[in-house]
Image 1: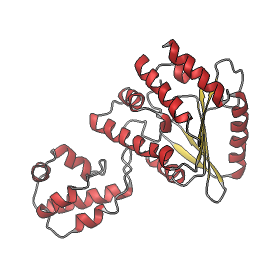
Image 2: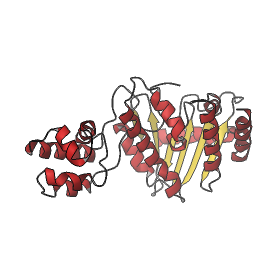
Image 3: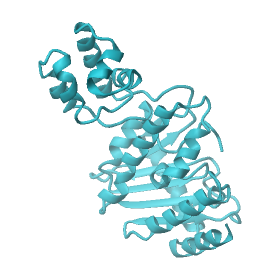
Image 4: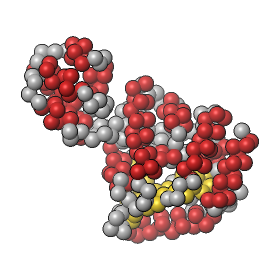
Length: 283
């Protein structure tokens, strides 16, 4: 497993994900009010029941404050109501890389989402055990707090599968993603059970591209496509520390052709289910 790839928009390089603008702004407000009130982070933390490290994470825009934070902090930071008003506009995007957020916004309203992956299980399909196995192998290593932020971001994004029943999801997964047994046998068994459950939903198709497949259009890397409500198609490409939203119709059309060919070369959803059940039994 490549330690710098996450297939889910969370930061994979040496450092923390860039916070959303609203989180950074809220954090700056907290810091300014705290300093104006003459409090240290440790002192503010004692007032609101948080560690100084958690207060620091909020001020730096790396952590989403809990809903009661503003209520607890306001009496100690001037009581102006500024925190309560600012908190209403904070976007919950902890752990999402800055380059991925534009694609993540498009996902929220897409009517079709298509994903081919050859590196690791796509973020929308990962179990918590699988995702944490990836996070724990990161280089440079992540702190416990960063791992929590990354999983929070991924779990939040996965709500798409439950909350958008009218969106059609298509996933094509290389068979070796299962055979690699990321996280161990138990984690792989849990992952297969999850893939089988998700694949049973009316709006979700999970296909496996078997190892026996020869040359195929996915040898150049993963493919992500979506269709917007106004029937435009967009694509996304992600590297180890970069991502690109692709809007050029010719480039998108090329990726659509490759994805369509992959769909014909992969096992059908029913055949894929059979293969997953067989792999589950062999663990």
